[in-house]
Image 1 (cartoon, helix red, strand yellow):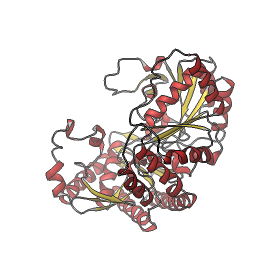
Image 2: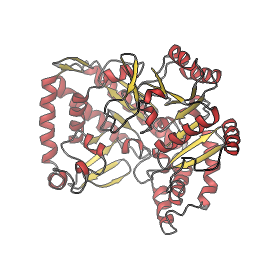
Image 3: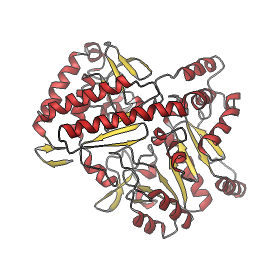
Image 4: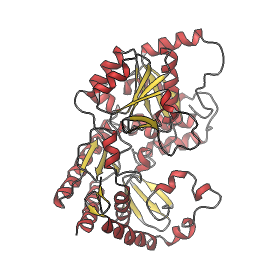
Length: 457
């Protein structure tokens, strides 16, 4: 939290700038090959990168990866990094889990896409039912797509246009969710490229954990669907307060509004996500990123009631394209990787290991924060841990935005990389995978302590 022009997160701005400068120099010195190849951008790519958010990494230039296995990344200069970013959840289960790698090799010789199911698909339907509790499922390529499709279903069966989101939410790049609260008023998120619509006309937005505001927003009975993460995760992490999810389910049912739970990040909670562990009862469910072990895939499911209503809607609507689905969705490579992930990788034993080490990381980072008298805190949801450079716990997205300290976080990030540790670039998120070791967690805590010592010396 920026307390003044001279202090960020309780650390002098000059000290932060000094750390950033010295760590940037050390980063470049350790990566002469990478700097020669990508230091001035990658030829042929807009902005010098294949995807624009690659420029958001706070390192002086992108780390050019040679290989990644388990929970370790090696760059082309031979630097090895303990990877706690794990593709920002895409590789939450480790890089190239052996069962997934075997499934990919097996399928690669049988065809990659043909708009028809393979035998792996026969196993996946029952696996999804058993794992996540809902009876009917569809496969998409990204969680963004899955959320878009699920929201179409919600609007179709309710006959309503509006959706409701929570300030600070993350649901990929779904247009309707690109809104925020500023001064208590809903507005389009700043920075949207080429957006010509007022997204607040079809989206209501309230603060997470604000039950009274939620009840008021649903009171007009014009909201088709509330789309929610169980925990706000793509800003500074915000945990639900006791009773919030019970109230969310009760109020949506009373208003005739469907509830969509997006577990794309909170799947860190357990094999069935936050939904199964905490007994949530969504009408619609979305999971992307790690569900196929790093292969691009997502799933979305619906309850018996929603499926019945959607079936009736389809029988009555005029024929034509539904606006849902992409050609590469539900391809056999996805089926093969997803089956291996669900059957052999995303297991109770794996999550027990992840949770145990995440507890250790949480305690270790908290001890460092206390040792150096920092006004920071640590938040955790299962295997997902985050240190936040502000007091906590945070209550909602507005508080999370104010707690974000980009300059300080960027300096810490590069300093950790130079000590052999990689965390998420956009915020201070760290993931424990089944391949992560206790030694890697110890090294992360030690590196964090060394950086905290530098900042507070």
